[in-house]
Length: 170
Image 1: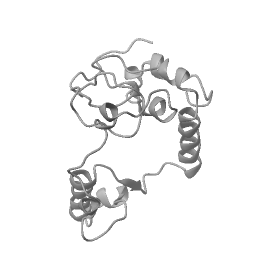
Image 2: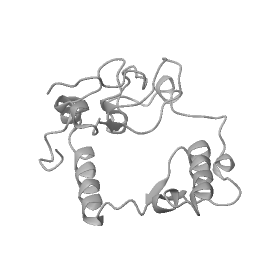
Image 3: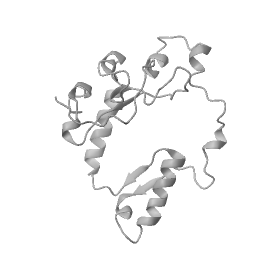
Image 4: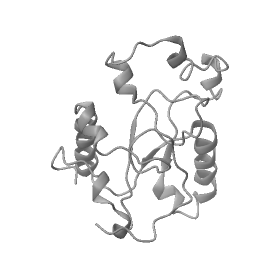
């Protein structure tokens, strides 16, 4: 599929070993590997914001409502800056669609590593299977692999990175 005018300034990533390969015992978890993942500068207490240990919830309907927009925008800013993610509610997407997508993603991540590697990120890109924003060999890594896909607008989609399994994913 032709992909035109896709954003080029989103960043990219250098290739690193998949977390699944490490977990499967394909490599010994020697100190030279583990040092990439262990963050001694972070202790467990630093993850608490003092008010709540629950994932922030952002209400899209409140973001669109002039009466609540400013308050919800502040909550969104906090969630992005302090947590890096949030749960979005009242977005209008039917629960069945969300559940089916969750099931497809879960099934994808349960596939053998070789099938996921077939749609691996290309060097310097984000799209595909891998890790995001790895820019140096010294950088600390996340304990998780990801799948990044352009979904909108439709002409940004590159079918090379869309999994063939499960068949309902596409």
